[in-house]
Each structure stands twice: as structure tokens, then as C-alpha cells.
Image (cartoon, rainbow, N blue to C red; front, side):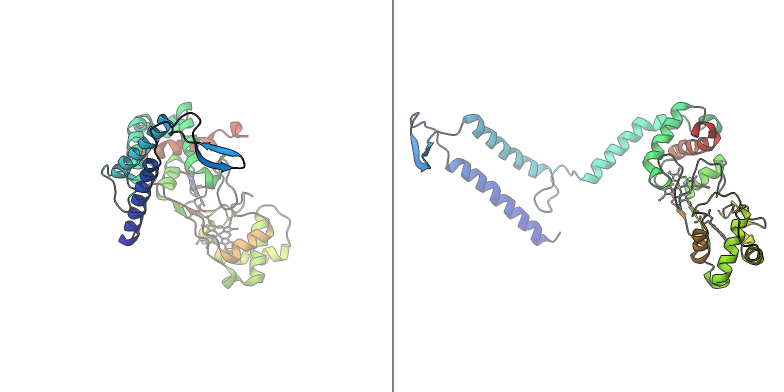
Length: 298
Ligand code: HEC
Ligand code: HEC
């Protein structure tokens, strides 16, 4: 804030305060001029009594004025003056976070050295994981972790980057970035249709056989380096299995063609700086548990 606007606010606030005090005291009457004395104003036959303000009202007003002066000294309010207490929204937030860390840190820490396979046996730990999932992950993966268009389902046992506790934890800590190049250039529009027909045929879908055969050649040329010779994918690259009818970006001919034409670039953000190690451990267990108990998920 420039010093002009700071001064502007200080001057305005001070004038207002002084003005309020002036109005209060200038109009103050202490003596009662008699029960029926009026000010002489008449409006529509209604007259105004000339009585002093009630004492409780008057003193309440004085208290609010004194309070506001105290407040403006202690807290930010007078332009860019920061207040003698040094309060800011940020340091209040940081204090609260530190307090919560102290209070709840120990609860998270008790699972630190417990292997994930064991943590998932602990109902309380999973409850905590679920709550953290709702706060940190559900906006992308859905509150039931089943994902949606572009956001993988975490309950189905099909993994882009692997579903072992270590692999899940690495995903959470480092984040992931899926790179599927665009093929409109190398394949051309006909090639896109042919290769998408071939990919659909890998999923048992009825497609034009000649077109799929032509697509198979291109697939061997351009796609197997990432998706594997049989199209079952590669978790080291996050290249999905293209044969199991589980789709990140949709399995209709139109959507598969769009994936091939434009490429895809899914981003799973790194949570290393957002969540403590102990929290990530609990979240790993929660995510791991989702595909371990498919019967309960249904
Ligand atoms: C901003 C959206 C976003 C948030 C928030 C997010 N994710 Fe993700 N996540 C993604 C996307 C997108 C992918 C897929 C990345 C790709 O396509 O390569 C992904 C991938 C994953 C994977 C890998 C799945 C697989 O099949 O290998 C896991 C596990 C995962 N997320 C868990 C989480 C957890 C747990 C949280 C909360 C701490 C979280 N995600 C928060 C968007 C998000
Ligand atoms: C450089 C490695 C690489 C190559 C080469 C590659 N892909 Fe991919 N492909 C990926 C990755 C990684 C993803 C996941 C993208 C994401 O997570 O956002 C993907 C996603 C896809 C999808 C979406 C799957 C779904 O579940 O929605 C299809 C379909 C696909 N690829 C087909 C192909 C075809 C066909 C070719 C050859 C023309 C090909 N890919 C070549 C890495 C590759």
C-alpha cells in the first residue's frame, strides 16, 4: 500500500472517531427538564421528548469508542501500521498449525514404523487415512476414490504406476506425470482410426478387421516401446494397459481417437511439501487398502 492511501485511511478513521465522540458529547444532556418537556419538534402530530440518553446506552457507546482505540493500537487497522501485538493472519494460522502438529503429530507417528500391510488391519488408522483423503485427494479422485475422466480409479487394482505400498508411496511423495505423445502427425487421420480400431480390438470390441490389421502394424512401430508388445502397459512409464477395458480417458472410438490425435498428459501433484511423512504413510495404507478388499468396496 502506498503511503498516501495509508495516511488517507488513518486520517479518515481519526476524523470518524473524533466525530463520533463529538456527536455523543455535543448532544449530551444530563439534566432532566421534566417528564413532559419536549424539544419542540413536531412531525405529523408526534412530539419529541427532551430527555437525556439512558446512562447504560451512553456508557456502552463510550466503551465501544475506548475499545476501538485500544483495538487500533493493538491490531492492524490504521493504514499500514501493523499494531503493537504484531498479529497477522499468517502467524495466527502458523501458530494454529504448530499447535495441531503438536497435538495430533503423536497420533500419526505411532504408525510410522508399522508396515503398510499391518496398518490396513487397524480400523482407526484407515479412518484417519480416509479423512485425509477426503481433504487432500477427493477433489480429483472422488470421495469414493473411483476417479473420473482423467483421474484414475484407485480401487480397481489396475495401476498406472504400480499398486505395491512402495509404489503408491512414491506416487504420493514425488507426484507423477503421464506423457502420452500426440500422434496426429506421424499417423495421419487414417492411421489414427486404424490404430484406435486395433486398440479397441485388444479389448474384444467388434471393429473393421482390415482397419485393425493396418493399425496393428503402426502399433508395433510406434506404441510398443511404452505400452509393450502385447499392449499391457508399463508401470515404469505410467503407460496404461490397453487390453483390460479400463480407461483413464474413455474407451469409446471417439475418445480413443482423441487420445491418439492430441496426446494426454495427466499430472498427479507431489505431496512431499504438503503432507508430513507420517500422514503420507497413513494415506498410502488407505489407498492400498482400497484395492485389497474389493468385496467390501462393492
Ligand atoms: C490435482 C488433482 C489430484 C490430486 C489433488 C491428487 N491426485 Fe492422485 N492423481 C491425479 C492424476 C491426474 C493422476 C494420474 C496421473 C497420470 O495420468 O499419469 C493421479 C494418480 C494417482 C495415483 C496413481 C494411480 C495409478 O494407477 O498408479 C495414486 C496412487 C494417487 N493419484 C493417489 C492420490 C492421493 C492419495 C492423493 C491425495 C494425497 C492424490 N492422489 C491427490 C490427480 C490428483
Ligand atoms: C512415450 C511413451 C508412449 C508412447 C510411445 C505411446 N504411449 Fe500411449 N500412453 C502413454 C502414457 C504415459 C499414457 C497415460 C497418459 C496419462 O496418464 O495422462 C498413455 C495413454 C494412452 C491411452 C489412453 C488409455 C486410457 O486408459 O484412457 C491410449 C489409448 C494410448 N496411450 C494409446 C497409444 C497408442 C495407440 C500409441 C501408439 C500410436 C501410444 N499410446 C504410444 C505413453 C505412451
